[in-house]
Every structure is written in C-alpha cells, then in structure tokens.
Image (cartoon, rainbow, N blue to C red; front, side):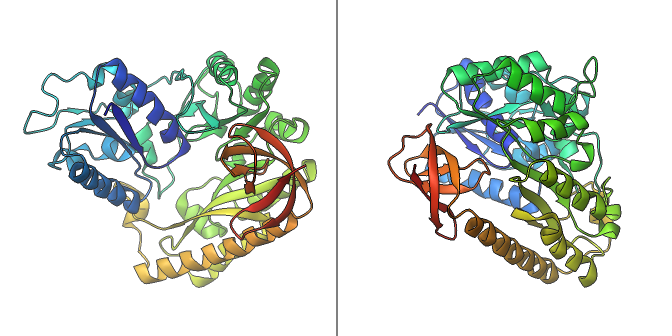
Length: 417
C-alpha cells in the first residue's frame, strides 16, 4: 500500500503533505495513512475526525498518523480515538525520525510527539521535487503568525512568524521549474510579514522581484492570501510591472465593518481595503480580487453585516471564501456574546449568494478575452486570474493561449487560439 496522505485545509498544508509523504518513506514507513488536519473552524476539525473513522473502517490494517493544526492544538482529543496510531505536531511531522516508532500501531495508547510550537524559531525551505497530481507547485516562504486576531486559533497551531531565506526559496523554485512546473505559488500563514526575522529584513516585494530575476525560466508566479495592510512599495511595484506575477490577489479582509474589524483586532479599516483595491487596480487594471469574509461574528448587527455585503462591490471582489463564524477554543471571540447559529448560517448564505453573483459577473466579463490557461488535468485549467476554464485537447501542464467563448456558471469555456 505504501504511504497515502489525506490533507485538509490550506495550501501550506498541501505542500507539507508532500513533505510528510517523503519523510515517512525515508523512515521506512509502509502501509500507513497520514492525515494532515486543519483547525481554522470547528467544522474542519469535525471533518478530520470523521475522515479518521472512515479511513479505519476502509483500511483496518493500515497505521494511521494524525498531524496538522488540529493535532498540534489539541493532541489529546486524537490520542483518545481508538483509530489513531500516532499523533505528530506541525514541526514533528516534517522530520523522518518522528515516524520511526518501535511499537507503532501496537501500543494501546498511541505515541504523541507534539512540541511547543511557540519554541520553533526557524523555518527551513522544504526541498521537494514536485507535488503529486498537481501542475502548479506551492513553495513555503513563511510560517506562523505574530498577530492575534480575536477569532483565530492558527497561531497556536503554527507558532510565531518565521521566514525562509531568499536563497532557499529560489533554489526550491529552480528545482520545480527544472522538473517541468510552469507556475509556482508562494505560500505561508502570513506571507506579507515575510522577512521581518531575517538579516536585512527583506520584504515580500523584494522576494518576488528576486525570484523573477533569479529564475527567468519561471513562467507564472502567484501569491496565496495576503494581508493588504502589510503590502510594501516593492510589492506594489512588482504587481504593476511584473507580467509573470499573476493578476490575482486573495485578500484577508474578514469583514467590511469597522467596528467588527476592531473587535476582530484586525489592523486595517474598511477604507483601507477599498483604497488598496482601487490603487492596485489603477496600477494593474486587469487585476482580480478574492477575499476571505466571516459572517456572523459576535455582536455583528444586521447593519454591520450589510457593510460586509457592500464591501464586495466596493472592493470589486469576484472570488469569495465565506466562513460562518466558528468559536475556537482559547480565542477572545469565543468569549464574546454569540449570535444564534441560525442567524450565522443565514448571513453566510446571503454572503455566498452575493459572491456567486459577483463571480457570475466576472465570468461574463471574460467573454471574448484572450487568456493563457494552465491546464491542470484533461479539459480543465486556470487562467492568469485563477479562474477555472474548460479547454479541450490540451495536455496537463501546458500553458495554452486561448479565447474565452462562454461560461458554464462554474467555469469559463475556452478554445485554443
């Protein structure tokens, strides 16, 4: 059977899942399933636990290793599951020796290897040859977060912010490009804080410019979620001037109401978000924005929620990730006056419907445009704007010049031009 990985959550987790697979193989592990969990919402944790039970039912003889943010934050809850054979923290899961357990799968109580994540001070660039089943590769440039938003449990799973040196990032990207990858995504927990802990304090913008200069063979560079209030002048110039930096930014907005942003302990205002979007669009007119938004945060009134609905239009958002508020343990927001779950779900549904209309308008605006589609699998790929596109007759991994002739409501319809 070998080693299989079941991954939940963010792009950083997706990258680390590949590292886990490699490290487990180095340790000689066989007939095992590694489950890399997410803790961003209570639902994410529930899904991970459900998956663990399903894996055990379907693979009664396999050894099950549980790791990721949920395991880092609450390892005891997973050691109590009869289905689990080993629990690893977010630092331990990336080391081969963590998987070399003498009585692995035989002890009544599963071994637990979870260190204090706050004690981790450095992040190494994980050198991998590629990512199984993907035509786009993720490269970790940063991990952890120094901010303490009142709703967020992730710093307890990832630790404080730490950056990968620029040379290691460039080396990893060179390896991936040499192995045929046409697009690389820079990922982390808070990538716009990149470099504050490194000598000379390089910024994300300087990293982007250095990558594009050092690896001229790289066709497409993309950023994962960014915090707009941290964007520096170098990154703004790169967005405006570097055609190989893709015209799609995903913003960590969370709310469109100033009082809720303050109670979230965010560092930007509504006006900051609107101003940022307008300035980036002035510099790069074809830019497309996505955003994370939380519906039903504690104390949110209907008027406050309507400000979040309005920010979709005011910032020109077209790709929304909507999260119904989920109280997380150890966070201040969990102790604030909560809205009833029905209201939270109803507002999330309204926000998703708003996002669906914005996305439909984006699809319609692309008709007749010429785009370059990175084909991910037979008949399906992504444009420069990260918009899904159906295209016939192109091999996975190819970047195809195409004309947009319509859409399906879910994806663009493109034909090779």
